[in-house]
Length: 339
Ligand SMILES: NC(=O)c1ccc[n+]([C@@H]2O[C@H](COP(=O)([O-])OP(=O)(O)OC[C@H]3O[C@@H](n4cnc5c(N)ncnc54)[C@H](O)[C@@H]3O)[C@@H](O)[C@H]2O)c1
Image 1 (cartoon, rainbow, N blue to C red):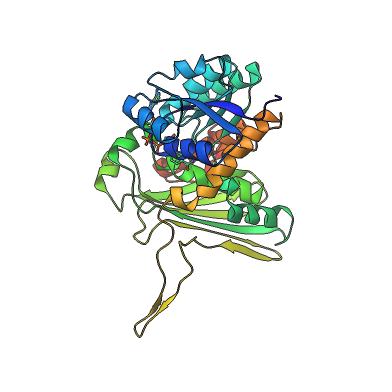
Image 2: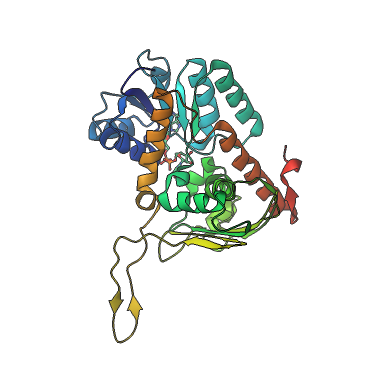
């Protein structure tokens, strides 16, 4: 493509759709958003007005069939992604799609086959790869700076659980929340996970249990090279968004702590304290959202591979299915059992 700016359409004007719309409008000069669609037309109109998007519509088909739109940014509910990917690919649009691609490997494979057939680019929204701290851990492991990795610990706790309404289409904690940590595990160690053992419970909200989901989990991961990992998820950390990682290896370790709104330390007679970490993903990962969409646009404009491929979107879904099976059957599950 010889253009300076990419013409985009956004599908979905919910929580993450608004974040991407604002970033595309105000922080990414190579983006030109022509239209936004949401079945909730008012949400589409409000975001269009705030982000100076020329047109808001109810039906995403208007975006997919628009001749001037080069690429779509799919931010609708998780249960719509695979269908929209397939339709966008058939219309020759490049695709950025939020995680997860789908909960069903059959539907994912159908969508990825259409992407392949029509030669369009696809990037999946694993934004944490674009966070400078996580990227530094990745670099330390891949370059051998901490030697051969032995242990990985991921702590990923939300400040508040999702609403029961959201849980209906989210696919559950493994597909919706842990999926980011599954992606991080692969990305940080640079190897595939071969086995998962999951323990979990409902410790926060009985409504989540009634919806068939879990809100507190601990996972043990075994990687192909023998590295061991843990993922610790809670949907309610009273002190705010808790996002920490450590990789321990033969020549040392690398760890990242939480990000804070300020660096002030308050010392009194009683204690020494600081303010709570940045509240949630929108604040904590703000920079990563800008960087992931800038990378997608760069990949399309300059015909480069996207940095998070369809396969990178698929493998964490296999991991989520293995984790759920492990929890249900109370035993370690090999990823090969899922394929
Ligand atoms: N990468 C991240 O950090 C991150 C963060 C939040 C959400 N997400 C993902 O983004 C997606 C949306 O999450 P959210 O929190 O914004 O949810 P949300 O419920 O706030 O928004 C979803 C929006 O999609 C709209 N929608 C549903 N079906 C549609 C359709 N057929 N056509 C057009 N619009 C449709 C809904 O009306 C709603 O406005 C989910 O897949 C979620 O997993 C990713």
